[in-house]
Image (tube, one colour):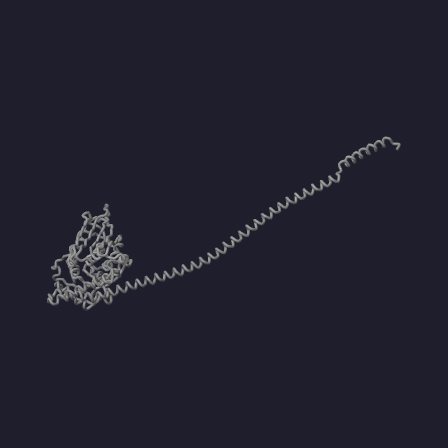
Length: 482
């Protein structure tokens, strides 16, 4: 109360405080403002909540989508797993089925191979065994025909010879179809004169052509080289079968053989062959099977014309072995044409024809040893040899033949391949150990597993097949004695 300075100080503080309170009071919110503030705050809270709800909904939708995708993925994976499982089961079953089928096929193949082998061996054995009695039939027939039989006997002997030749052809066809169907057949590559070969066949079939009153024509391209490299034996088989069929199934008609050059190079020559006829022809339904073994046009044709039904099967296989493909064009009642192409290499040296005639003087004062165990074959072979004024001696086994040859002189040996004890090939090998020059001819009712090259490899000089063709028999002896 008395201290002015202090009073003034407090008054100033009072005024400052009052002013500050007034300022604060002036800033204080009223009821409406408070309500507005609260509403604003509430709206902010609602907006915040809506925003959060939207985010939550968005999150929920995303979660649902993820869940759906997850479920879909799991379902797909499950289906894939199930499918893989089923596929594995099916694959396993299929593999098992395939293995079973493969095993069945293997067994069927083995059975078929065994059956084919058994058939081949059976036919080979049958044909081989038939040759021995057939040799007697043909041999005795030949001997009787040479002894000036009576006229009344000639008809019977001629019929007997025809039957023997027919049976021999049948046996040869059986043996040949077995051989060409095997995998062991080899192709020769030697000089062959196609023109000469076809000319010889043309001459040899003239009698058969005239018998059926057929015009048999041979047409050859002059540009065919003289010295080609090929297999004359197999070519002869092909042409003989096709020409024989054409002449057999044609009467009062025309058969022609045509050979023409397709293309010629320095070392190669392609030749096209046609064997055509105007005979009975082949029906369309039979053309697809005509090249199968034992197949013929019909039962009636077989009865009327005969035959084994093996000729065309042999021809087809031989043409394929020579690198060609045989084709058939035929119409019933009009005729048939068989055609094929073969490529030949051109030989470097000129082909020299081997003459087939022989001078019978080479048989004089000659001595031959016959090594044969069959008594009938001994008699026939001895008689055929003696008919040419040749001396002969007979031995029935290989061991005694070796000793006899070691101690005596013979100009030639006729050696049967199948002998008791050591066979003819073994005997020949032993003979060659001490005698390299003695001519030895193999006599064989040749089987499926034998061939000329194999027999010659043992040291034999030539091979004559039973039953003997007399001309070939004497020709082989004459060539080795001359």
